[in-house]
Length: 509
Image (cartoon, rainbow, N blue to C red; front, side, top):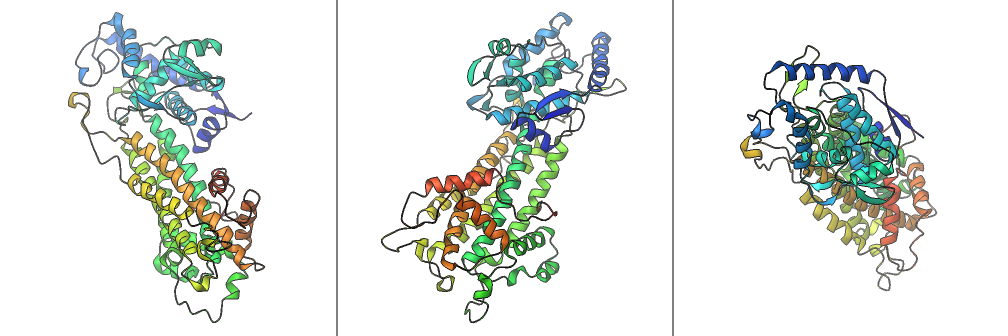
């Protein structure tokens, strides 16, 4: 079994390993002394008599209320209970696990003033497979992901709901079944569990990887369609991209050239082809996809940075200072997540246009039957798969509208400008799902279109993709439901079966 040793550094690969693959989490030896030192500063502040936010005061607009010393532990428990106010269906298991891991990593950095037992307890939950049931809606993404984290923290203290071995049960019961003990919260610790962008950051890490895998498939689908449509390669000339001076488009053009290298199909129409230019969805594709690649590179950089962050409030520093600020605000995560949805809309949008070009049959030089039908008229072929792609793109266009720019005030005006990053994450998650289906439809159609040009072969990269599809989907020789075939190709995309290159250059972004 994989193992992650939790210290100060956390990567997207770490999140994937724990959230999806069930890697075991152990806590590095140097975490305990670092957290103990931070905790000592909190204890000192408790004895100092001054009001310190969240330690001996209320929260949010109630922060002017001083709390008696004999009620400080109850204050933290009440915070967890009162903030567990999420609504609608639960978040996916992998998202909750990612959130817990990011929370544990943040606490382990020793800036939250929490005891090491909290990190140990979170690691124990992850290792035992106890997953808190966390409602999907409730966080506005500013004072941390309060409601989702509160539902998770409830399980740590033996309350709330959890899933264990396929069954949903009370949190305390799940802990007992897994031979785990609930945590008794001390001053500052409830706040430390609830403050922070841990849901958003966990989602961003998962979605960054999902989008990268999808982008790989989109490039492969693009190359397949170029030869299926007997398109020109002139737009891939590297001199064009040197003149444009944009990194992403040049990289995409290079990847497409690599996938198509050695094609016999392009040679078959090298002469006497009356077409002067191909549609934008073919000719401008490296520009469009390359621009989204540059956008996604920005998203990945923000994900990498956020996984190293401490987003609690207040923070405890080595000199004993306890400083209130706004590190919990989700805008550094919300904007990348909003950008991701916009980029995915373009990845899918241009894929749908290429699919439309393939199935419409208006380009006689493509040598494709209308709707790629084996018997036009008698068989409708792939007529309606393009409808499905169009329907998905219509929703993707709506998902591209950013959540982070529409604001509502909370907490009696104290929290008057929120990020709504969790909504940005939910939109991005749905966008990945829909865009995957659209690219799957393009791959399905392009693989069928390629049959019209046999026995000619495309480039090695394209032929590798066609072979992968043919392992799951046979050539369309008579009408059948395309839905299972689309689902099969989408599943191949999700598990990374389509790679744009076998070179050492790696991904475009």
